Length: 156
Image (cartoon, rainbow, N blue to C red):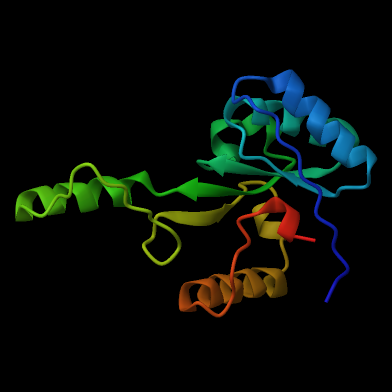
């Protein structure tokens, strides 16, 4: 296994590309190879920093290599929300008369609520063994054999 360090920061805004750039630049200066953002429009700054530093990024919500093609050369992948799954489930529950109101339903990997899509430009260059390890990790998460930390402090 590789020796990996995880850096994290909290920007506090989804509409601050300059802040996203500054946060990513700091991580790249600390030696980060890849920055994953979950920062909405602030992520554009992450992509800008990745281009300037010759590094990589992972997008969020949708395939950002398609929605922001000028950054496709640095976007390895994106974690996407499968909103269609939530809509379909809600419509089906409404038709069946089973829609629970006033509650929250979490849709994760097991429920097809989120997924990984590879970038349009860089996705094909991700080695098959890395892809296989990602699939295996996803299967282990769904099976409950691999837990995903929810506390950033617990990552390292």
